Image (cartoon, rainbow, N blue to C red; front, side, top):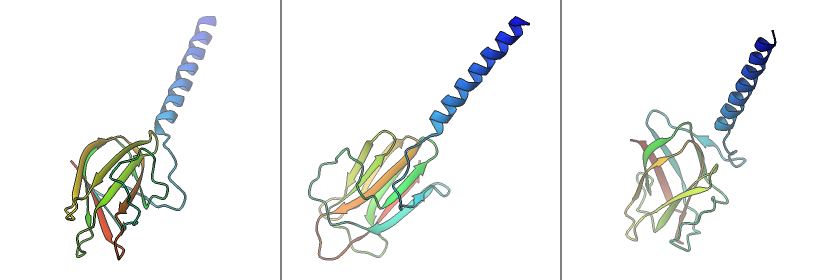
Length: 153
């Protein structure tokens, strides 16, 4: 009887540790309050908004955007191309930067349009989790509408 009781305790410990490991894997950083969370529909996702005229440097900072316009949740590691350009029917963007931070790790990706407004593309492997996304542009006379398109590869 002692042997089976010991086996039951060992089994319980293993199950408890497995449960903790699964809970740890499933937990992700919480999105900023008031920002809607987006996910892929089929193999693409399109985000639209007005770029903030706050871009003063071409340097990609490691900090998450203080006021992200979008939050994207990836349920699994995803290989994708991310495009930044003007919303359809809008003029080319002035120099603009897409800033995307993985909230669990604080890892950051940035991509900038060219001075002539040529759209930008970023290709990469993105870990599962929650991402804060913001688009900033160099100062312009009128607010500029952008479109960020994620396409799974």
